[in-house]
Image (cartoon, rainbow, N blue to C red):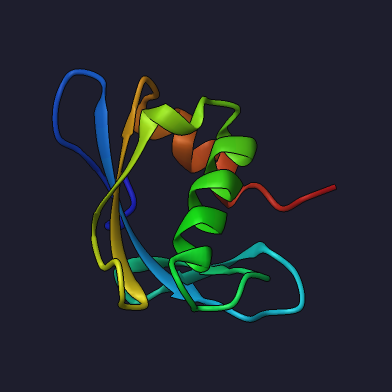
Length: 100
């Protein structure tokens, strides 16, 4: 199990993320210390990067946006996100698999 992906309950996972807003495209760019680094095309203004992060994770993991909650880091690059309904293994498999 990766340090950035922690089981917190039966169907509750908490991800530790490092976000780089304002990138050319939204993508996962590997591990950054004990966090997963995600580049987002959205700018870091007025919550746009946070909205883009939730949308990105929702699409990547094929889960509804309502299953994703930003726990901390609203105005910071370091964020903690709660995901309900998936296993650690499923999340790691999807997020660490390089795109085709």
